[in-house]
Image 1 (cartoon, rainbow, N blue to C red):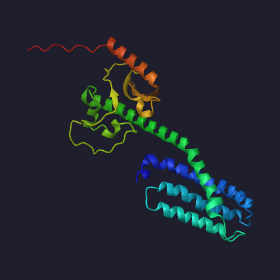
Image 2 (cartoon, one colour; image 1 turned 60 degrees about the vertical axis):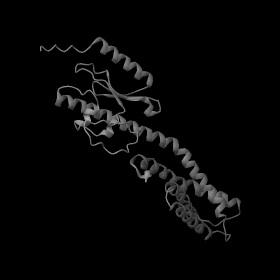
Image 3 (tube, rainbow, N blue to C red; image 1 turned 180 degrees about the vertical axis):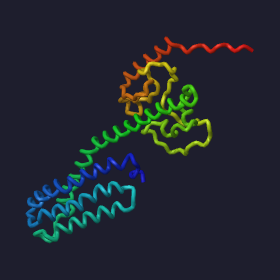
Image 4 (cartoon, one colour; image 1 turned 30 degrees about the vertical axis):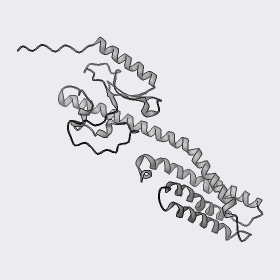
Length: 263
């Protein structure tokens, strides 16, 4: 199931932790107020906490399993168990299970979803940025190792795959889904979403070497690998300035002409 992939499990664990706190702390207090307004007393705090926990946790768990066949069973089981715990100690034989406390628990879970959605989404985006930065750093190490083995830098980043410096997946930003099987043919001709400038060995360390398009981070910016193998985050405007400076240096320092061969 897609939910259990590495990029989804961590945000949902944070959301579940928030749901547990809401259902164990906020929901019992709101439930007590709601029952008092309806003239229902005698429900202990322990019973309220236990009932709210079972009923409330059934909702996010059912949301997690929304694509599975067991989500309705989980939701109904949690509601029935929580309602039964409350009804067994209430001063009235039947409590409004489908009214008062169900609406409160739904409210708590809505607050949990709304409150954590932006925070968890931001954490997920930051995690993707970290992965992209690590991949760019690996590309820099691969370029240095390629030069050590072959005496020069490659003309294409795909040659690093041919030299077994790293996998083709690292040529794609984390946001790009990787579903195709690894190509068996060599030279490697698969996708590469990083742009590469073949710089000379003596290029200044602050020139742009490899970069990714800002579109992979909602046009907020992009990571850049410099000639000194350091990785930095730049805005789209800064990226254009860095590229213009790099192109200007290349124009001022053209590669030496190869000597003509005598037939």
